Length: 281
Image 1 (cartoon, rainbow, N blue to C red):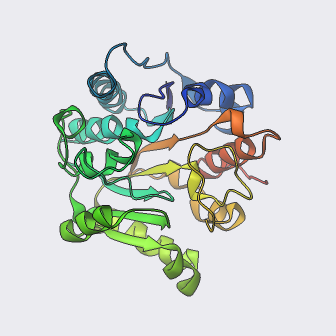
Image 2: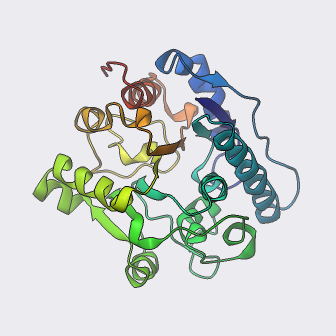
């Protein structure tokens, strides 16, 4: 396993999110996945925001592809979630086809430059991965995701235009109302089945704001009513060691909002669970 830090805040609201990877390393991130090798970071380039982000995502896609081709599992650690536009194109480039993807997030991240009310690119990466939006993110080299094998778990804060786009494309969205009705275990099992249908390789993209901010306040854009870490952890147990799991991404840690270290502890527990280490938070 190779840990690829991406200390970027190009996509979001707060420059301090760029410190997220280093703050997690200082909190003991590598102890949670002791077989991992920490790689040099993929640094954000200078320049206007969207073009710089596009260059960053292209560099990240190449690094991820090289890592997979070498036989190692990429574990990408952001930074804001806009980097996903590079991570998963890189996975697809290495595989020769798009992976299935489980996207754990409070938000849909499916805006385009035309639909976004904020202008922040961290609300656009999933749309870009599906081939929608501006060329900076939507045309990163690599195959676009197949919406039949993409699902979102934990969504609860989004705009109508995002929902309409994803429904039109056929992406399965598991919102919090459905999760409460059916239970997270049943929903997560269905999400994995969608991503891995027919023996397809898959990955996990985890935005830490999927966890309720009462437990995990150290994120860039918190949204109340999220998942409980204690429910999610056992469902992740060992997934990162499955041969079909080809990459994992963790994003949106804001150390300045994490005054007591609770969010960092949850991030470490999530990674520990993914790679088979017993975790408590």
